[in-house]
Length: 235
Image (tube, rainbow, N blue to C red; front, side, top):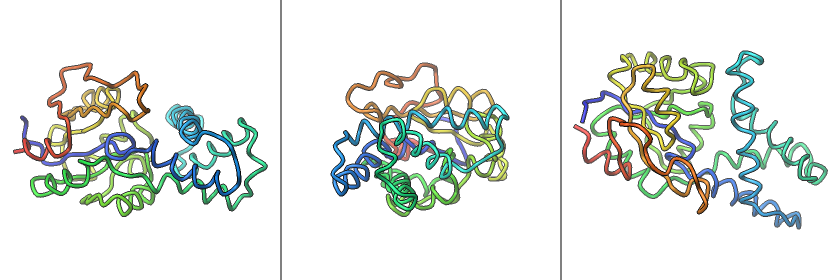
């Protein structure tokens, strides 16, 4: 085990269960409007717009826009695609967009982070905005020391700035920092830019039929089964 001075974390999927969180809010909202649409399917469709929206920014076709705004744009697109756009006024769509602020942590996330915080700096390195990460932290009791990631970098992972500007904001070098994620592609990028890497499988992030990121696909510095285990083995 290396001796990182800081651990930075992917959040959506790694620390919080975005799918169940979004589906829960959608289920409540749909029920109030007598809308018959599977809330988990809707969450998947909404999440499906995530990477294409960010890629337009990573590619330089569009300037940086916070994920909160991209989520709202994506929501409008999905509602239109499934024929529900006229069921929601603008205020209601903005309220539904706050589903992304109400994401439950995996059972090991909060206790593991509290334990790890005693040993090193901990921070999210997420594509979420500072505002969004703050609200998720309040909702799920995530004791971050600070928030880095996309808004610090003004770009989205896996662009190099998302990692290197986050590391620089902590006053550290890449080799001093471990990126922890449930997504192999996130770790491939982090390793490319000099960070240490930790993989934690979240085998139901996309539901029972999940087909990717079930196992590590490289020799990551560590592979763990929980954030609590990471806290135990951290120097």
